[in-house]
Length: 115
Figure 1: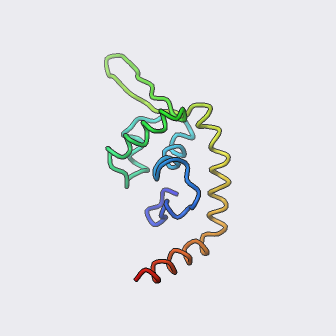
Figure 2: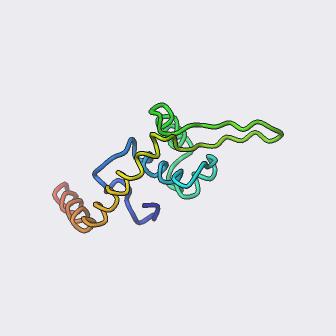
Figure 3: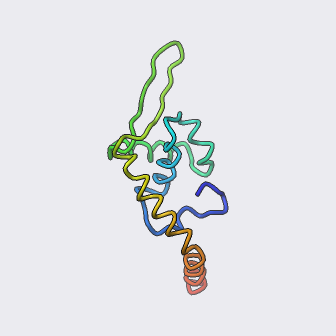
């Protein structure tokens, strides 16, 4: 999913916007800072990542946690509702992996027809 060769939009099942599913997967193992999310999501701009995080927060999937102290930090983590998406997402990923070649063939055929 995070491989630059893997087009994340190939999976026909969407979990929010283009990046939401990948943000959820990045938070699967615990809270992360914004800059930590940008590493595996290297194709996303700061603006789009911010928009995606805000949408996930609005929908109750992610919580933004501010840590006060000498160095102010902000982390994002999955809520129980967000965690409940992990299993369906894993099923969708398994399905896409099983049908990968068919999905690629369909996309290539559609692109050829559009030319």
